[in-house]
Every structure is written in C-alpha cells, then in structure tokens.
Image (cartoon, one colour):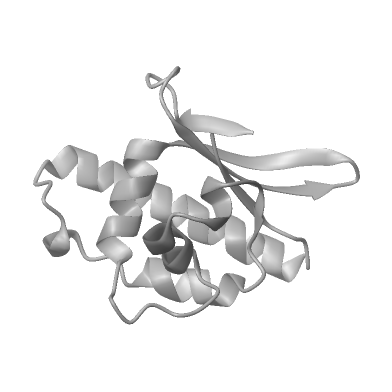
Length: 124
C-alpha cells in the first residue's frame, strides 16, 4: 500500500483505496483531510447516482464499510470536475497536494479498469 499521502498524519482518519491481485492487496492510504477536500472540490448538487460523491454527500457507502466502486467511470468523471475555487481553503501547497492525490487516484482507477479488477474504498 502506498502510504505517502498519510505520512505525517498517522493516528488521524484515513481512507484506503485498494484492489486485490493474486491474493495481494495494493492501493493507496490517504489522509482524510486530503480526501474530504478533494470530494468537496468535486461536489456538484446534481451528482450522479452510484458515484463517490453520492456516498460523500449521504455519508454512507465507504463510511460504513468496504465500498466497491462498481462504476469507476463515474468516479473518474467526478474527480475530473475538481474545482479548487469552490473550496474554502486557499493554501496553495495543500491544494497542490490534493491535485497530486487526484492524479494518483485517477492512474490507480484507470489501471484497475484495464485489468478488470474490483476497486474498494473504506474510511477508517
């Protein structure tokens, strides 16, 4: 698991995004501060059903248990709509890190779409 986006925040909330291959688990561990900010920046009141924004808005899915990303294409569309201007935060370095997390998430999701692997998200 890639933990670089959780390093320095140990003990605080985290989100795991992962997949499994040949019995091995691989993915990312993300500090919830980054993850929540990203979802805030992607939020649209007309969010799509079965996407990650719906889970975020309703505080269900990955908040309750392991959530399978059944429609990764929807999640990719949502991440593509990240708008830093909609955030209350103006810290350029923090926003830069959030964009880096988005890039890594998009790459991870695309890789697993190609490999036809299930992707899971869980808030801890």
